[in-house]
Length: 510
Ligand code: HXC
Image 1 (tube, protein in one colour):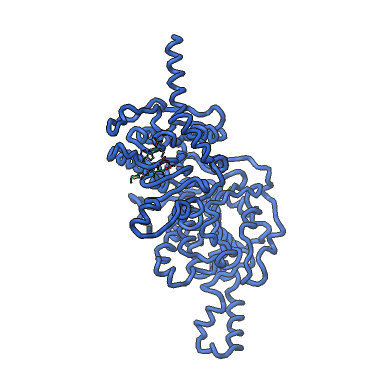
Image 2 (spheres, protein in one colour; image 1 turned 90 degrees about the vertical axis):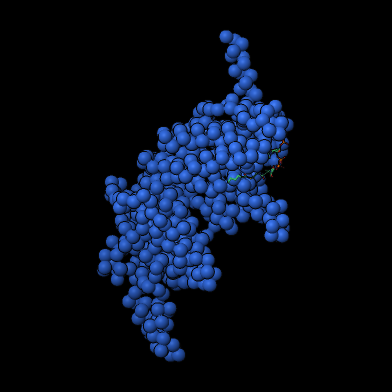
């Protein structure tokens, strides 16, 4: 018996060593953790149950028959984060550069299948040179098997990708189909074709970092949701993030008890909106003062700052928050912000997370570039996302809600459940000056007449009461009582039931 146990131990030890101590040391020298260290840090202590430790590749070409490493470059299994089940895979760069073979893919797929079956999130830690070159089409097939499962898992269980090393070619498309991507600065890259190919094809000279580093993807392309300082920060951030998410679309949002008073009022909110309607203010102050314990997890903070998205809790239950940010582009909607918020709203809706929307929006951003790049279709994404969402939706208009953007931002007409406005709200087709310049164009040379008409328009429409008189606003609330009203609203909406008409799926404007 002892010899059998010894053999098991020695096989385990070989698997744990991956591509060998030299490659582990090289990984550490690059400031990166190994695949196993990442799993250990991500999961609760001693909770990891590994599967597929002895899986080996089946390739015999290019001398591969003689170089098999147990586990084949990916560590897979399940464990818990703060006691809640999660399935994980972590690619091992020390084994053939973490490249994806047929068997490596099978391990990931098996784990994903289980996650979908039992209803638990999937977290992938990606550190891979892409398709295992020696295997050719077998590895391409492996990728496609993973992609197929990403699609099937979408909207069923949350999927999170941590990019912790190079990710080229096929290695980027699986993360791209997951719900959230966190990258590590100066250490992780995502591109379809690397700098060398780019130079050959387009003659552009670019570094890996500029082309597909964490800063690029979290500020320019919007591919990544967060750029973390290092592996450890990325993993701890993921643990915190995980606490906001339900395990699946069949589960209620997680509950985390809070001592924050549900009836807490905050008098400072009464002066948050400046008297001058053109002066910006920080909408994050409202968010922080509304959610439990000011604990707000912002997603995509570096991209399309004119809209803020992220998770918080109200009375211990997770909520998604979408807010126009007057500090950036006056909070208007443009292509990037519409796409950013639309995807977030769809995530929340898919996973039964109520959506709180704070509105201060002067409209859609005008401009040739916006029109030529498709603001119509991209703006429609957000409209579509809010319109199809059936989760509880509470909207608070703090100041401007102009034009089409009024409609888009979870208005009553898009089945907003509770639509509140602060007394400072201005709900109109457009700002008074612009409106007067159109409808009283003949008076444009007459400054006094224009000023008078503007004041009239302002008095008539720059308030929440016209909309409230039509029932488009349910109540004009005191800013200081915003949290209290949202608490009561969400309690009321907990039993909400609403279904869209049967369809195979919609055809949202992509
Ligand atoms: C097999 C690979 C590999 C791969 C790296 N290795 N990538 N083995 N298949 N795809 C191996 C290397 O041979 C090396 O082995 C070890 O991993 C470490 O690689 P290095 O190059 O020494 O590391 P580094 O300098 O850090 O560079 C990392 C890298 C580079 C940027 C990822 O290795 C690279 O460019 N790899 C190829 C990327 C690529 O073109 N992949 C195919 C994409 S096509 P030893 O034994 O020396 O340690 C694709 C198609 C899928 O993915 C499409 C689906 C839609």
